[in-house]
Length: 72
Image (cartoon, rainbow, N blue to C red; front, side, top):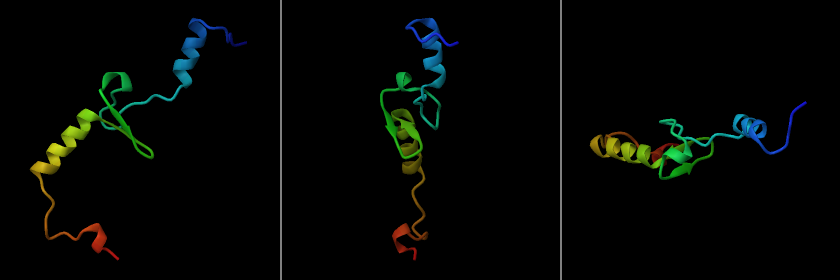
């Protein structure tokens, strides 16, 4: 039988079954980051967003590639 009274046993059960909010890229949890942005099926932290922006700025899109709006 599971003891559902508040205490260590319930805290362990809660930790095991509560969904863990964490960055899908670096794995850090919500307590380890300043901000965690939620998407439909993933999360990204502020540090990973900054790193992504740096990559995009250093490697601009090839202008010869069509835009998504140009696709049929």
